[in-house]
Length: 218
Image (cartoon, rainbow, N blue to C red):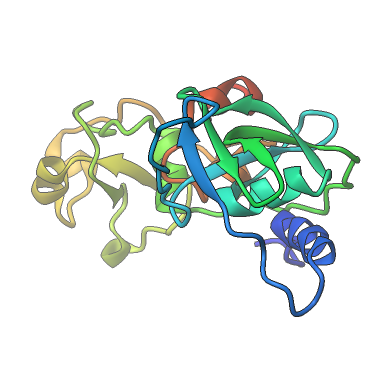
């Protein structure tokens, strides 16, 4: 583990948003409408708590995934611009403004990226690394497995954890691969690249993000 913990990039963004909304005031209410103008259409209520937006630095380096509402506030306040909007053409309306629902936004000013340290091992990150495929049979992965079981001294690390289907996970139990005659399809390794810290915390990445995330493999 690194000697010091990295400063979350989201903390820098949060600070920027907090300064754009006066203390004691609520953020303006918004609703989304599909089709641009919204004439004759009922507002589409978006799942604000689930939808994420990719935030890029001014240099197009991926920084983090923001909640949709927070991303809209950055755009409305002029701190970011929309790079890719919603494929369905949805827009967000407030009492005074209209903004395309973003999928990718870019900061207007460059933000210095703090020390990041190692990519944290998470279920989401591991699934992205292994492309949601079982390391043993190649089927659809549903869980994670320790190649050398924890009960037999195996570490909880990128090099000892793999994506695994429920069937193989049950069959393997606490056995070693040599005892089963199994082989790994790919030798597990810690992922590298500026986008992996972001992917480690995102369950599902929007396809529009992929050009900015580089090669999603270890």
